[in-house]
Image 1 (cartoon, one colour):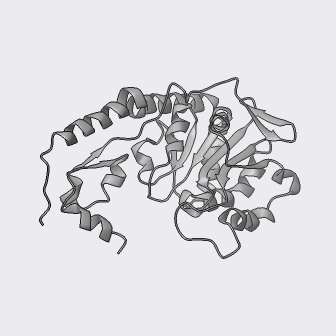
Image 2: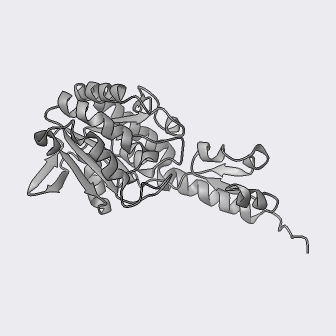
Image 3: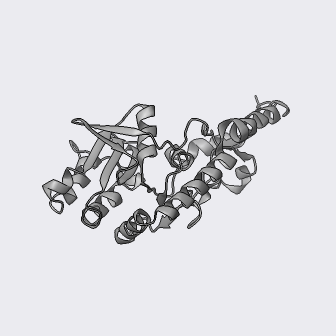
Length: 271
């Protein structure tokens, strides 16, 4: 029933546009051939690494690139984007990395998937689930910043030592490609469409979505290897610039699609 709207449009649609191969591939073969893959694009000239970046997290406390910052970003903190997996990895991660500061961005609402029980939020449900396993001192190193202005979002990426991105097989978050453009060392879930951009061991590190122990190991390993982080970050940025830069890649592809669409013969509908 959810696909009924799409099926009704197949007979009259001339062309489609998708930001990722994964999304285009979810359509039936009969319509897939009409879909052009062209991402919205990232302003890679603006989204860059910045060794002087500073992130203020309240109470006069600031974080910089000199701190061991682990970052996790969702529009809303919810299972579709692996928030529950990250939280379940947190007790062991905090014990293993006693100097780490954990920064989470994301609202309390719902973007995708099932709603939480009435009167609750996914954010609080999974925070409550692990809270008893985390000491008060360690909990002070976990910072929920909610939703923030874009420049603060960029500062989060720029001070990040390891950035974690998890998702179900679903729409790819723009924030992942922005993290790549900012030269973040990334640990991401081994799911489509993540594998379109994260090449394991080259532009980031992939891990099974549900394997919290492996997630901790991957993060810990990267935090102990500065040279590897730098290599992964540089390769991630190069990939983002080559394939997802707004001005040189994505906007020209979109304009080409529009020009092609404008040249199609006008299809008349039956009366």
